Length: 259
Image (cartoon, rainbow, N blue to C red; front, side, top):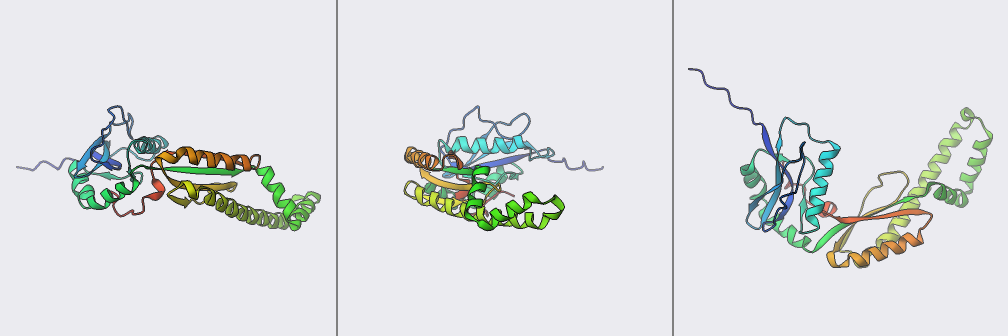
């Protein structure tokens, strides 16, 4: 008598993050998937994992999936401390979430959540007004201004080397300005933030890109500081404050992530 072939597993458990065990899940909360899956908690001791079922044969990584992942964590962070897990973490089932993820790292997760209690992440992002920062570079650097004038008088094929040289000067000058402006902002927010993490630029015209961990009761102070920088840099840098967000930049260890 022949044996039946093993049934291929269809669904797995997608993990969003770790929260205190007493958290109440909003019955309307939705996660990744099409249609978006319902979110539940797998609890162990003092902690719980936010999870939802996912079809293992379904491609994961659409912009909608990433947005759902971030929106769920940011919504959770507005209510309770949360440890976000990198996008794409999937385990076989609820038992695996418990035995491979929560149990081995329970104390580390609980300690990290205690550190984040009453705190949330904010991001300050600024981008240079291109024409304004270019004018600054040309005004401050006679060599750049000279090359700019020479390029205007030459055909494209004859000005190639000068254009490369000018581009290098402009990029170097913008990098120096970015460093100085970022340092000014970091010093300005130190008094209202617990921790600061400088992010690398995501665009060549980025002026500042800084993540902050802030006590929940100090959001108004942070907004006033950022507004002051916005006025100081008006017409030169467009500035945005994002948050509260899950503390993506302040969860140090990657070893406890699901695989």
